[in-house]
Image (cartoon, rainbow, N blue to C red):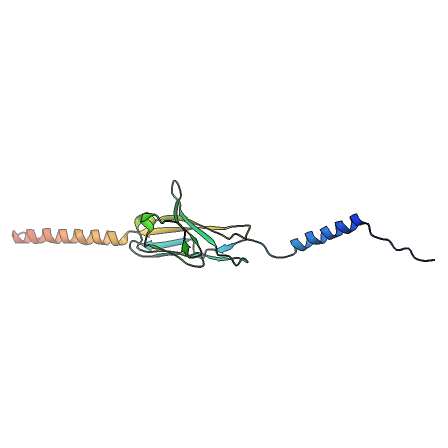
Length: 172
């Protein structure tokens, strides 16, 4: 007697193919996301100095990232937006000639002002990636240089007063 061979039905074949496709997409191991790290979330700067708001990102996409830095205020203020290192649009007057965006998303602020003090949100996205990398860095700007100038000025004023007293034959 000849053994009967079972011929798979069309529906069974289609369901097996769909199962393989689904399993293959889940086992690809590639997550379409921008993975971002921030080495230091608190940066201390001094008035007139520089601050490096450092981030790093990785992605499987070969496309350039869109990088957006915002300063948290009552209403967030966009500091800069770029595609890679190329700045998009017009910078606000208070940031012109004071910022630089690096390939890894890092922001360099030159000639720090007291108004630069605050929390900066960074968002890095790539067209091919499903998930965006996001993070925050807090920058404190110390007005030490200003206070030293004020102290020096007060010292000179006191010194001037001292000489005036001395000229009038009084001790300082």
